[in-house]
Image 1 (cartoon, rainbow, N blue to C red):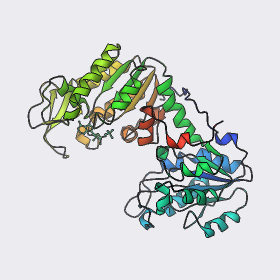
Image 2 (tube, helix red, strand yellow):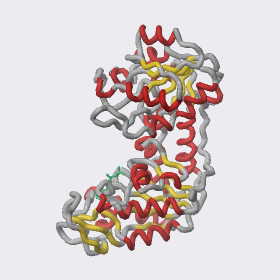
Image 3 (cartoon, rainbow, N blue to C red):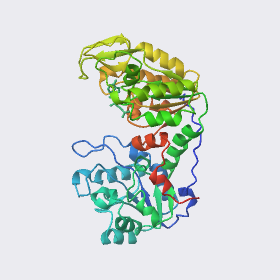
Length: 406
Ligand code: AMP
């Protein structure tokens, strides 16, 4: 059953949208994030990133434009490296849109320009990996200009890369009218919406490895959130700062004072702050390691917390009951190891069952939700780890800022 409310709370997008452009018969350069995981035989193991840009691509097809699609894949470091070719992505895209996709062996240069010159309305070209050229990550002006020469309009649908100041994200926008694609727009609507105008009560669940990675998110949400739930590795820095003995759990010692300051600042605003009350501990994070369940007050020396325990799951789940908006970023434990995944999966179910607008974003929480089998019951799952985190921290995304104002 679908529990997550699906009414978006809108962020403000005062930039051109693809819908504002008259793209019929025009050459449209669509920057997507097709940075998909590949196995050792270069087969795609998860095509969600391709599927998430289909609304934009299909819209451009329906409008009868000439579509030039560009992406990066992996980190070829400015050199041609066939392990990172987009050839298999091209085949998958063709299958998904049921239309011929012409895959070009490069992304700039006279041959690419000639191929683009031969396009008819409705034709689709996929360019080879942008990062085969050093100019991409250097945001090089000449490279940006060479990309811009291929098109009349630029559309950014690469939310996962929108925090990068690269040529195909920022540089190119100097030379073309530049608009947001539907994926970029949707991500902004949800993530900026939840940060700026959450429907309250608003509960933020934060987990993952380190406090340092999430401090700015807590700070940015401080005056909008009603409850903050902290799990995962970062909880043990807070607990140690409160004087608990956390054994060998992950702790950032240089963050102890800051952890106390944050907890006190949050409490002084009347925000409820939840930490785990029990945890699964192990001596190593190897699969098959012996585990014990203890309260967070009795983690012995030589043992580390690897997951939250059932009492914490109950405490956190009850805290979610009245929520109208839930934002979740970061797993509750080392969920990659089966034996330590129970707490994360239980929270995934609690979030999915909540009668609230539920937003999962940043880091690998999307993977946790998918492994827990509840993706369908979450209102919105962000496609962009790093970019989502930056939005939640209240930072401006270079790729969004660079688009043409409305
Ligand atoms: P992040 O990218 O900061 O969201 O961190 C995600 C990572 O945090 C995952 O790979 C988890 O394995 C790890 N993690 C979660 N809980 C713990 C923990 N208690 N101890 C160590 N690592 C953890």
